[in-house]
Each structure stands twice: as structure tokens, then as C-alpha cells.
Length: 281
Image (cartoon, rainbow, N blue to C red; front, side, top):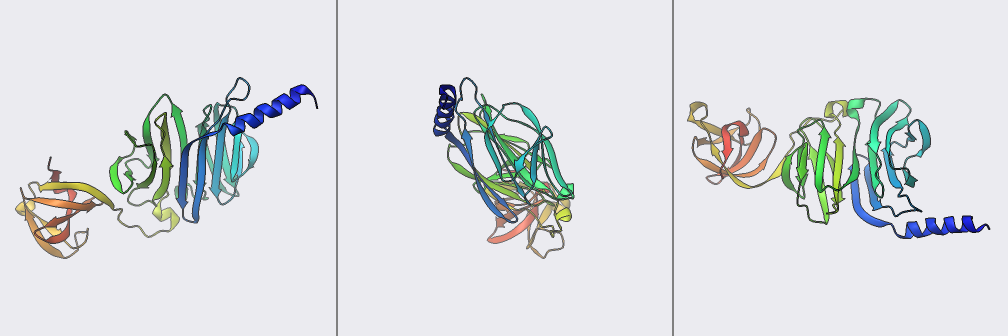
């Protein structure tokens, strides 16, 4: 065997041994769960390759810049670091987007495909060098970000000071199907999550209120019609009234939806509209 060929094989073998895990992702979809590993890639010769992992439901063909590179689940850690147009397609269901592969990191593309674009969902995860935190964007925007059961903010948002450990992430919005996955952040990179939510109507799912546990806090009732808000058994205006909270009084928040707080007031547990409240500092 020529010396040059033997040396190249040794370089490749050594490079694979030096792979370091930077992030672990668990993606939960309607049909089950997948466990993906996001790893840093070591240098081969004088260049650092990039890695790409693509999963889909159902199985589909993967193209980069028009070139067919395989079927899902797809993985390669020997790709050139640059911007690509990725296409994941099967039958009449297709996903097309721009992705940027970065040296020494893995980019994850996870899709639930559908012929109806509004019924598609998924997340793209990547690591951004020279930045920090967990940056979440979504379609549609203004989706709720909940991490480890704690409501954080609405998308788009940069979540700072995440401990380098595994975290459970939930992205939700009224009228859309939740996306839930787990991350393991790295203080050396910024983790970018680009999340797409599927329309409940397009998926044929019965719409429901999205709720999440709220941080321990008190809210004050602002000036409301009649000088009070009705405490209702359920979060809608047709639900039974179980009490009234006067303007200026406070209540403890238990959980919340997009439009209602569940509060504890005078021993009763009920729902009030958020529009007539402000948080007590």
C-alpha cells in the first residue's frame, strides 16, 4: 500500500477518535423519539470538516445544492463548511431551506414532512462559535419557550446563563402542535434552534389552550369593568363564575395560558383574563 494512502487513512482514523461531544438532542415527534449526538469534528490535515445529521418522518431523500447525498436518517462528518441549500423530499412532501455548516460542529435538521406546508414541523439545531447562550427563533413567531418546566419568554429570544447540562425544551403556541426536545448546552458556543410548528388545523388536531407552569408571582387586578374581574372555573368567558377579585387586590399565579392566569385567591383556584392584571414587583 502506498505510504501516502496509509498516512491518509491514519489521519482519518485519528480524527474520528478525537471527536468531542458538544450537544445531545432528544427530539419528540408524533411517531416517537430520536436521540441525536451533536459533536465537534477534529481537523483532518489542515482543514476542519463540518458534520450534518438529517432525520425525517417519513423517510426521505436528502439533497445539498441539488446533489443527492442519501436518505434519512443521514449523517456525515466529512462535509465542507459553507452555506448550502438543503432539500428533504419524498413523494409530494418537500422541505427546502438554507443551512450553514460550521467547521468542527454538527448541524441537525429534523423534519416531520407533509404535502401541506402548514402541517410540517421540525427544528434545525446548530452551534455558533464566538457566541454564547441559547437563541430560539420560531415559525410562527411569539411562541412560548419553556425550559425544564419553567416559562422563559416568547420567540425570538436569547436565553443566557444556561448551566452546561441537559435541559428539556418545549416550544408551544395556541393553535399549533407543540415541539419538545432536550438540549445539552455548551458555554463555548451559542446553540441556535430554528423551530417550525405545525398548524393544528392543517394536522387535523383539535385545538386546545397551551398552558405552562408559571414562575411564583403575584398579580394585581387593574381597573376592570364593574371594578372587579370574575374568577372562573375554566379559562373561558362561558365558564362558571366562582368568585370576584376587586381592582387593586392581588392573587397568586399558579399557571398561565396565552390569555388567562390560573390564580389562587381566598382559598379558591380559578382563572382570570391576563389583560386586567399586572405583575407585582
